[in-house]
Length: 307
Image 1 (cartoon, rainbow, N blue to C red):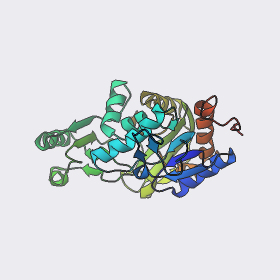
Image 2: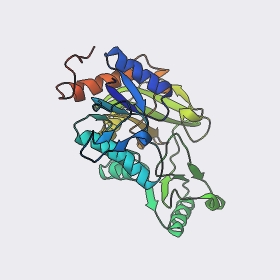
Image 3: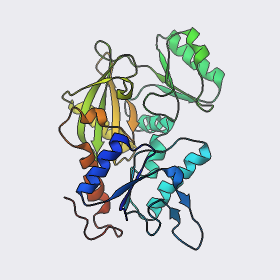
């Protein structure tokens, strides 16, 4: 019987690395989609039905993906994660973290209210108000990014550069998430990905894109560079503001050399980062999960010891 559940719909490279890292610690893990889980609120069986764990719950869960869907579907997936935590099963990152961070509006809210440098952002329901806001920004000489509230890897993002672009401005499920575009320092387009585990920066890279969207999944190249202390401190504060076990914090350096947090990812990819650093990120993630959440845990087999 497996020990660990890795929630994902697409295990791929990241799933394979995690599974290998758990195996090195003597733990068997399986991939499960949250779409295949159930709540069993009867007087028979476990209250959470997770494929592969019919007899007993996993000793821990690692979240590598939360499917999209209707509001009801997403809430149900979060219910599963919340339920595991309530049943004393460690979830890494847990449902509360996922809930805050997959919602870009709440992420921006938490960054702003914690007085962390982040781009000027507006979240609106009314289209005319959104158009007026973007028009005002354009008149002031700024460009505006329109993002889906839920989304990753650059999907559904559009840059508004002139008034005629407003015709293409569409809401995400009725919500307009608008963010002032920040021109980066130096030539071309670049930003930083800082990977944080347990309030420690373990790796970082500079991403250089072919255009304004600097995602490795969209062709950006990765460069290892020395991370400045102020940028590291900002990444740590952003991770702390969202109470994350681990995070991928995206930071941009503007023309004046100021830092701004543009994303805080609770389910970050690290394939590009792994290609330019000597540490094994999957092993660090698994070690942190075991050290902080499984040692002395009531569900943990006595044989489990960090290797």
